[in-house]
Image 1 (cartoon, rainbow, N blue to C red):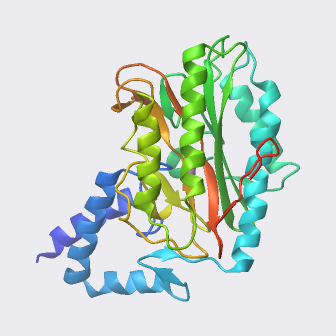
Image 2: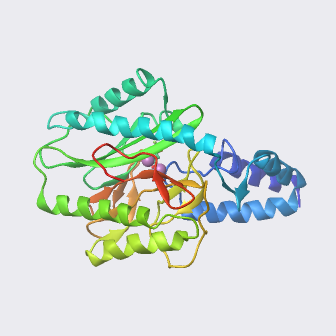
Image 3: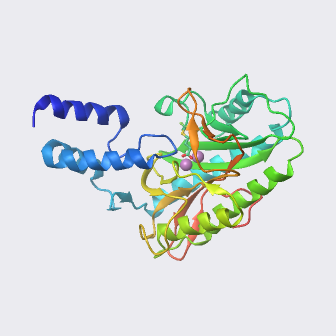
Amino acid sequence: MCDGYLQGITAILAVNFPSKFEEFTHSGALYTISLALYKVFSIFLTKAAPWFTMLRSVNGANKSTIMNVTLKTPEDIEKMRIAGRMAAEVLELIGEYVVPGVTTAELDRICHDHIVGPQNAIPACLNYKGFPKSICTSVNQVVCHGIPSEKKTLKDGDSINIDVTVIFDGFHGDTSKMYFVGAPQAHAERLVQVTQECLYKGIELVKPGARLGDIGHVIHKHATENYYSVVREYCGHGIGRVFHEEPQVLHYGKPGTGLELKEGMTFTIEPMINAGKAQTKMKRDGWTVETRDGRLSAQWEHTLAVTATGVEVLTARQEENF
Ligand code: MF3
Ligand code: CO
Ligand code: CO
C-alpha cells in the first residue's frame, strides 16, 4: 500500500470526520451512507495502519462502551439532566415569539441570548461543522437543519420546527418541537400530531433489553398507517459529551433486531415524517433539507436515558407528562 494512497484516505476521513474519527459527519442527522463508508474505511485502516487502531483506543480509553456506544454513569446522567432541562426551557420560552411577522433570525437571537446569558451554557449548533446559527428553524416543507435568516418571515398558517441543543458542564441536551404560526392548517395539525405520537410510541418502548429495531418499527408503522412517510437519510443518535455519537437511531426497522438497550445509554429519537413521499433534497446552502415533492414535513425530538427499569426523558417540557 503506497503512502500517497493512505494519506488520501486519511485526508478524506479528516475532511469528513474533522474532530474525532468516532464522531459522525453530518450534524444531527447522520447519513447512513457516510456511516457505511466510515465503517469500510475504518476496517481498511485498522488493517492497513496500526497507528489508526491506536488512535481509536486512546479515544475510547476509560470509557465504558458496548460496540462503541458509551454508557453514562449516574454522575454523567445528572449533568445530562441539567443540559436537557435547559434545552427544554428554551423551547418553552420561545413559543410566545412564534407569531406572524417574526423572522427566524429573531427567534435565533432570543434563544442564543437566553442560552449564553441566564443559562450560562453553550448553543451547540453555533459553528458546529460550520453551521452559522444557534438553533435550527425548519419551516413547512423543510425537513431539518433550516438556517435562521433575516429574510425568512413567518406567516399565518406556517408550521415550524425549532431544534435546540445546549452544552452545559460538558454534556449535551438536544430537543425539538413543532409550533404553528397563527391558525394551524388542518392537514398540518394532523401531520404534526401523528409525528409527535411517533416519538411518544418510540419512547414508550425504551427500557433495558429492548432493541433499536423495535423503536424504528413502531415509528414507521404509526406513520405509514396514517398514510405518511418516514425520512430515511437522517436519524436519531447517541449523545453525551459528544453531540452525535453511536448508535444511529433509525426511525424504521425490524422488531427484535439492532442494538440491545442497556442502562446508562443516552440517545435521541427524532422522527422526521413527511405528508408526501419520503425523499429529501439538500439546498445549495449545504444545510437546509427539504422534501423532494415540496409537501409538508414535521419533526419532534427528545434526549433520553435508559434507566434500570425504563426511560427518563431528559428534555421533557412542563406541558408534557412523562
Ligand atoms: N439538533 C440537530 C439534531 O437533532 C443537529 C443540528 S446540527 C446543526 O441532531 F449544525 F445543524 F445545527
Ligand atoms: Co439530535
Ligand atoms: Co436536535
